Structure formats: structure tokens, C-alpha cells
Image 1 (cartoon, rainbow, N blue to C red):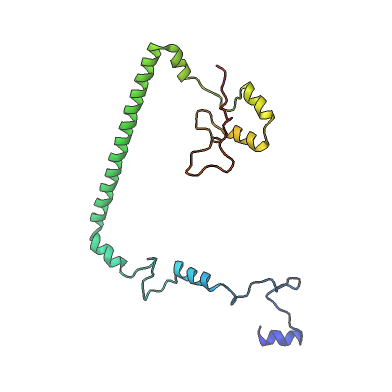
Image 2 (image 1 turned 120 degrees about the vertical axis):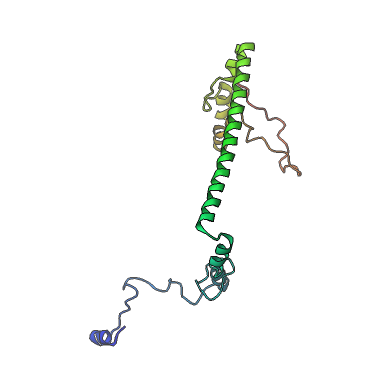
Length: 187
């Protein structure tokens, strides 16, 4: 505080850093800190000192010269950039062609299936409501715990069941569930 401010208030000094109702004993002190954290912070976020390069490469004094040696002109840089974009376009076109070829093969297979067996074709193209439950599932859900019900509701039809344990090198502590059976939907 300035001396004129101290003199104008008299002998009573009021700290201007904290309001009168604030308690400053909970504020962290500037000097009490973990030195490891400070060292890590200095290594990861070094000061922009231009006299030497940083260990993680945030600033290097020789970058401009290295770029000038690697890419001598703007025209060379533009040529490299256009070649890279052309390469990416070729990759994209080959992927699109492969996807179109696979789609055509799938479409031909579906047409053959429609000619061979219309019932299987309709079964393959049937849309299922993933939220729909069979009567057996609804009855079984009445006796389940809330966590089991949530797991059952989160299960997506046609995918590997989440509640089935995967084989591991070590056996389970509770053993294998021999009585587990998948829900069979009536057709």
C-alpha cells in the first residue's frame, strides 16, 4: 500500500486483498507446493526462451532453416500439397469403387434369394423393433433385479449377448452359469 493511503486511514490497516468477510487461512500459499508438479509443469510447458531449444520441441531455433532446406520454395510446397491431395483423392475413389462393387454383389445376391425362396428373402429384409419384448422376456423381467433389467433393455438383438461371460484363462470365482439360456423368440 502506498504511504499516503496508510496515513489517510490512520493507524488501522485494512487488507485490500481479501474482503472483510473472507477468511484467508484456506488460501493456498505460493511457496508450499509439490516440487515434482512444478518440475513437470516446467518441462511440459516451458517458457519461450529463444536462447535454447526446448526438450519437447515447442520452440526450435533451427526450424526455419530446416524448412527452407527441405522445401526451398513456395512452388515446391504447393506442388507437394497438390500431390498429397491427389493421392488422397485416388485412395477415396478406390474405396468408393470397392464399396459400390460390394453393394452390387449384395444386391445380386438378394435378387437371387428373392427368386429362389421369397420367404427367406422376406425374413432377411424384416425390420425388427429392438425395443419389442416377447411374452417370455416380459415375464422373466418381473423377477429380475433392476440392474439385470437395465442390462436386458440395453441389449441389441442380433449381437453377441453382453451378459454371457467370455472365456478367460482363469475360471470365474462364482463358476460357470450352466443354467443360462438365451431367450428364444416365437416365430
